[in-house]
Image (tube, rainbow, N blue to C red; front, side, top):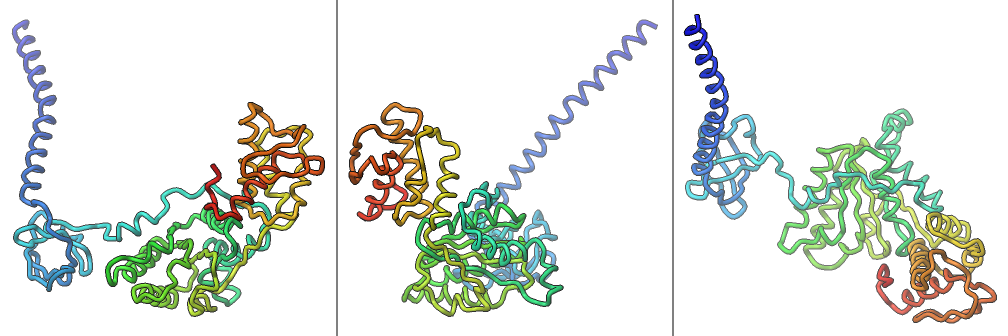
Length: 389
């Protein structure tokens, strides 16, 4: 009995060793086959477009720099992914199909797509109640509740254009719309549509709208679109392609276009006519009520002394935009830190700061005022906005 027991223990140990070594051997075999497959594929020479499938082993492929070719399909290629119009990888010697590009979107368009929604919301915007209401009706509501427009028997606007002086909240409002909707958001700068080689700009526009339709509901945000206005032929071709896409894409409300510009007068009137861009939303400089709201937003987390009164600065006759007001608050905090203070306080004597216009402190007496003068000085002297250091 003892000998039989020893044999059983040896057999059990042998089985355990085999089970432990089997996955390792299997992984080594898979790695060897994978290496052999990569050697067989080689380095792809180019990317082609599949025009027609002849049979299970042959197809017709076109490449951008040459004519159509009759090529072979390697046996390891997944035939289920092959369909006319898809992008395929071609071997560097025999021009055989060695793979399929499943995501055939232009890399530039893929970069434009926002993976995470912006954190800004409507609560972060000071004032602009009328502008928020208009963009909700034009962009947000058609994306979230398109059935309301169908019941009303009207077509929602295809897009909106936000225009006004710099720093008045155009980009901030576009980010808030992207935050409020669950739609995919494509962020585009106008200069990105102007490419170096002939035909690349219109092709990028077509690819942009194609990706937008595939990921519908979708919103396309175009910033500084006035950079696409000009007399060069390539710019004109890009503009014509954009006009064609605005006329042709689906009108059910699944794709929306949000444009932002500082110079609406430089745009082609054919681009912003009703039927293409149906809503034009102006962003003026903030009035007293809006300035008060913006100051409260930017100073809500600041350490202000009890003797600081923002009303003196709110009622000042300065052409400050929302971005300028934010810069003023930042400058005030920097001035306090420079004096080793943890609070923004009133000044007890006349304060003169480099590039700060001298003021009567008996009337205002705020570091915020001095910071505002500094911002206005840099703005009027042509210093690039946003660089306040």
